[in-house]
Image 1: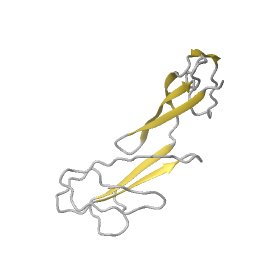
Image 2: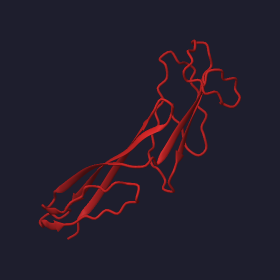
Image 3: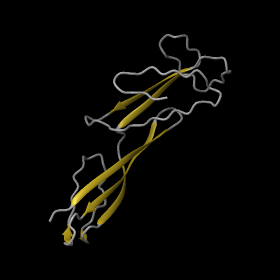
Image 4: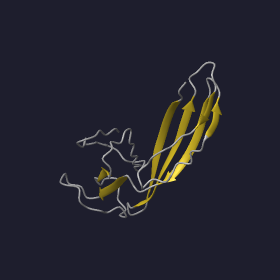
Length: 155
């Protein structure tokens, strides 16, 4: 009898006030599932092989997993930034290229604002289900999005 293993991992990136990546942390749950309806699995040994820039996941030997049950291993790792996020914020947008970095300016409600968020993947592996959130002032109106290539944008 073989166990089924599911791994779900989420990466959290903390970005500082000057758009620098402060920390990157992976949080995950490793599930070892016994699909059998009658047999207990004994002496399960898990070995994880990760690249050098990721800390070891604390997986120990699992003495047993009863029939139809699962054993959960939760983990957190600190690792090198796998993505970089930068933002250019323009408080004097005229329809040309966004190039002013004016995040600290106070603006009135009639100004046209523009911002460009760039996400760069530092690894060769594709990133699935990446979400970037931008919080806008409550009185923001007439929001339009330009779809970048490649990728999608949702408002």
